[in-house]
Image (cartoon, rainbow, N blue to C red; front, side):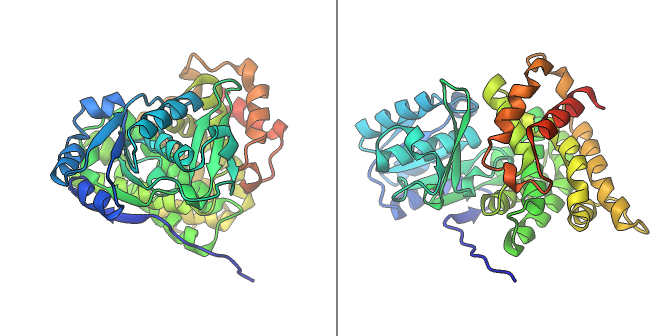
Length: 385
């Protein structure tokens, strides 16, 4: 029998130009002092200008925290917390990809809880909501604008830690597809495959429920239809499809889970500081191929949602096509093979496998995983056999 609960604590406002309404929504949240959390690249690209203008129009003073890095560190969070505390910040506005939004979630956690960020990493540990957060994504990848968790790297152990609690979700997401019009093609590609990974894993993981299934399979369709065009022939239409796909995939995995692709990718990111989307993209086809036998119907559903020609195929063949379709999509948008990254050393695969096994999402993988299985998958993704 089905028995589950589904709630979405984030209010989503979608549409071109929504960024210009930041001040209005900050006022709704009672803002008297705002901190914009954004990396220098986003700021220099002019992607925070509408946010600034909107806050100024609403007569809300703001400060910045801009020391954002891929795979945000615990010390970045601590520093941002002190900047916010000194400025009496009562609303946070994160503008950027997952690193900026996750950093803002973690800063908001310390503002309402104190201590160090390690105190609050784990499932359901928060005692109250974080500081109200408006999340404005600038990539179609992480879905962090609607998820109830944040990933922070422990700078001493190089292990990625997770805050996993609905009280960490942004209060408002302003999802503006126009933000994607100027990002570089390689970033669109990597973040787009990241979003596809969220959708595929959300649909097939052991914690999937009918509500998340509905979001996940629609996200697969949107991303498959729009990613190549968004990388090669950028238009507002393809950006709209990708931003929708990313946010909807974020809802799907945020309220089900991810699985072995993410466990491996987070291990790679922790050890080598690889961007999260890149790490997911290089692993997705290999892990999908391994998992197919665990749920033939769902993987066949993914093949169909991707538009693959499954007519007349058995369910086994239709399901098997899924991994090949994902591999072709990765090639089409220029995702490099794992072996092409010089920093990745096969001698580390056992260590990486141990880290992946310890990830909180390992039990959610549709096939049972052990360290040995992770090692085999790292080998296959790297060597191609």
